[in-house]
Length: 322
Image (cartoon, rainbow, N blue to C red; front, side):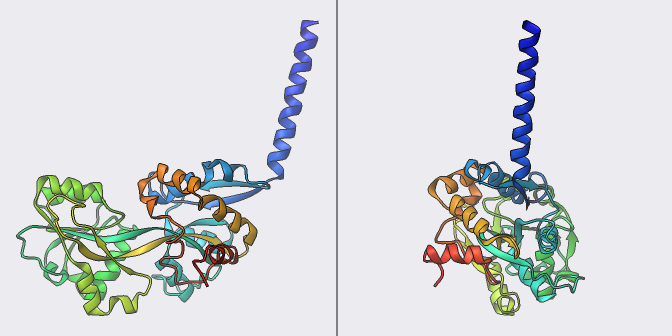
């Protein structure tokens, strides 16, 4: 009798697994491209994947995947290998125009869905260094970000535009390594392209009196915003870093949620309707404070390329688009 009961129980469990597997298989797999492990892009993907209302979205199974970052996401989403992802506004614009570095392909299948957060340029120098503008960096040792990173790419764009990229002593390294080298007098300045406050700048300010260079002035005077319209003006607020007691004007690129043009508009609309609620936005901020920038009011900030039809419907209903 006991063996018979155990056999029946095992059979029922097996049937339950079969039904559960069938229900899972009936769901359409939706790939969400994030970024490298530990990076903010991947936090976005993971946060959306684990949010209960999205996990329980009828008919769909959202799966986060890691990637190399913005450019890889652009290509994967354009080809349809990924359905959603995180891409810088600048890369979307350059991709549509066929102006990616060493790549003239046009990536026209990637459509904007929502603004997530801004990634501002920050350039750290030592107080009393005599460096007043980017032009004064000529001949100086400058940390420019990891090779292949968004920070490095945007530093190259900006400094090349100013005519100083080949006139500085470039050091390709990560933020923390740059802060350490800066503290040991191995660098005269270091560049970041990330949300503030940055732990690396905080570290640098603990061992040195630092100054943040005004980057907006050089950008404005050189016509940078006209040539690269996806960058927008921003200021690092006074008090963000020790000893920096005034706002520091700069510029930023916008980090966007995007989707392939063939993704069902209703799915895009549903996802936005779940994320952009008080509960959804609180969930995002719980994952990372950077996401406090995500609001209904900022939903289309930094978007200069076409919106996905599902996103257009959502933002029109919210009164953000006419």
